[in-house]
Image (cartoon, rainbow, N blue to C red):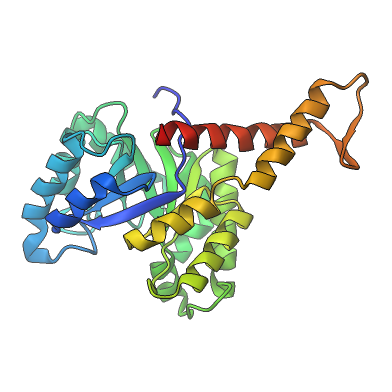
Length: 289
């Protein structure tokens, strides 16, 4: 596989594949990415028609620079094979697969994408949603270069842990941390799970801030009203941009091996962080151009 082009994934919105109006509305939403969903959001009787609608939408080119993905039904369902074959032919930016629990599962999915002649640009996003997946996240993340993004399935994880959804997500932090470590060790992007109460803006924004502070690249969303908050939370602030520019200016104008900026000793690691902040800002600007 060729190297993946860096792109922002601050806000990645699930859309029910059976809702044609939602698929059309998404063309004007300011989200970075879309997950056209054939799984939880679609009733069993509607899955064949939703498959056709989602693949047509992915092929349409109507979503501009947004990253367009298709979530298929899980490998343990009767719809999985047909979903995967159709999605591969449609050629979205990625195919999202729920409940990926092992490296072998990743390799089987990659093999299936190849057999169905998915184009090279169609990558694999793996949802990790179970205690077993958390404990094997490093193996999953490193299994194939075609896998570029891990997606947290926090609702299923909470269910399997017998945990409650509470502010701060203390019951889930061990799993979230393991997944983040795995993603970074393998050089993958990672998206935080959804926030269920679309009326609770304060709670949603608090969870976005927590996800950003932990190191997630962005958040998966269930409602268009959550897009703006996620975009702001996962974008560099003006203060962060000013600081990054100052760090680079100080570093590039140094006259010795040691430099300070605003009283802080600056090393290569700070320079790398500053460059990453500015690269994200530039990529966001490019999306909006």
